[in-house]
Length: 216
Image (tube, rainbow, N blue to C red; front, side):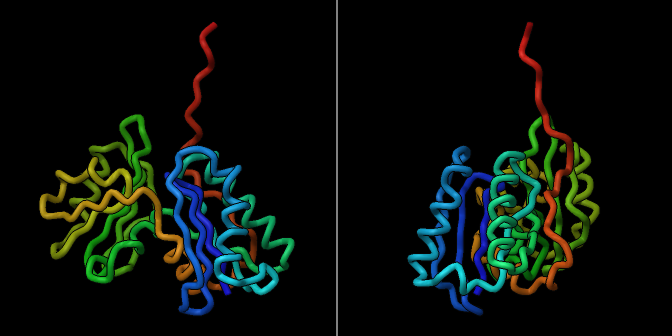
């Protein structure tokens, strides 16, 4: 039985799976407040599933890229719970989870997961038939557009994620899905297929935090 968590983007999400069976799942859109909500939401979803935390055998959690605060909230909660239960904690890339959240037909073709990284950049990862064509990367918009054009070899194409519209003009025939966050059921299924980890997951930061000092 797997518990999956995501707090990296514009939602607080939890899912519980027993094998291939979805016992319960919930996605609550939010840009702030993940820290206050994630533990309570996990308890609520586990109760809805009729499951006890002691019955879990694995935890899956998104590790980024994403909002710095939200990313750390989910990862810290997942690692702490896994430690308390003495079960593995599996980290799943946010871009991989977004791409896998597309429907079956889309995943059979070219899929690019895109986040708006601000400051004229996007976080990008492209897949073809579910196979990753590149590592997650933070790229200037022009560079990202060139990378997509280079990797795309024809056929059905989907851009998915909150930053997908930023690259919509690159591939004019693309289906654009502005999904705010990955499906937690998908996160759980990716975590179930992942090898047993040999270490705790670490956050995936593609660039340093952006912060400015207050004016004097």
